[in-house]
Image (cartoon, rainbow, N blue to C red; front, side):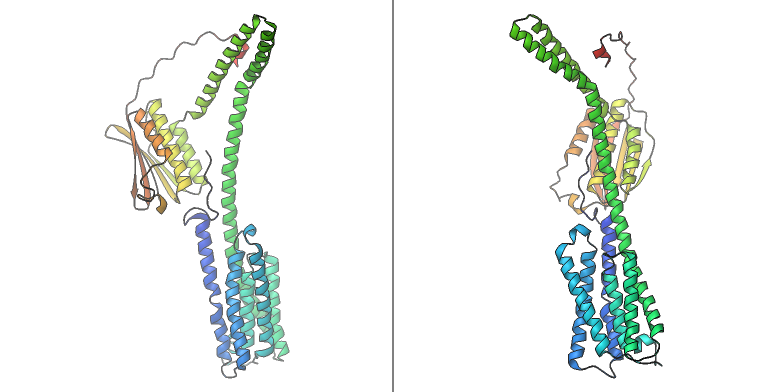
Length: 431
């Protein structure tokens, strides 16, 4: 059965969507710390503030850098085909602002010599501005660059910090550069690790969808192959005999009637064989469906528990419950944000009861969200169970959706097998 296409970010608040929301929120909050780090430089400049134009330019560039960091990070975490021209334009503006901020810090912000009254980071405003800008510049582009260029960028930003101390003639540029490289690289790795986890989850989700589509395609090919093998030869024979009958009819040959009758027989046989093939694919078994439910739910990343044993029911009632399992599991995978699904078989009040419950119910499928109408799947289940004296009900229990199917626990005696007829002699019948 085909699966309905899911949104690009997964189902509900789980899976890819949950990881993406968590990653984006975390990194955005980290980016919002950048202005507070610039305030450290402002505090260090309090005893020797720059001129008002320089201070205003630093403030404007710092705020623009923070906003552009979040914008570049936001667009960069989108899948590559969805970035487009806005991302390239934003990235170009971000590069210009970062370069301008670094240039202004090197030219207009002092770098104080040691000894410091406190830690160097609170006493060296130029290094503070350069390290902060380097941290968030490299972090913002982490979704679109590989690890090697990011490391190179971190080392380059640290080198600029050391260059600032060299230009100021302040001793200790190497030590400050090494410490800055550690700070910037550690920040970059935290950004990159978060983005890498998101990329891995996206790839796993895409691989799961591809696996499902391949399984559906393989099943279609298998059915097509079997149908071709079963009726292909018969249909080819029908075509040949039809042409022969038409030619004989044009000649007024009485054998045309025999050929037409043969065509009718072949068509009837082919129809019977097709029904046999379809019936073979439509028949389901409860134990097989329970095993398949484990596999399908596990492949969809949903924890599954099957409680109880398959009861000794007659084939019709077992098949009805098997269809319930198939439809219920399909709905869990397609229409819920479930993290867990429980299938329970039990005997109660002279009936066999199958309960399928899952968490992660979407608001769109709660009572009243769609007028209370059931889908075609539930209507079909009610018809199947009604045919064997059973029924199906659904209810919501908090954030859980519970489907309950009930069939009478009556075991019908097995009928004796009918004696087999004589083996067919016609090759067409043996096929």
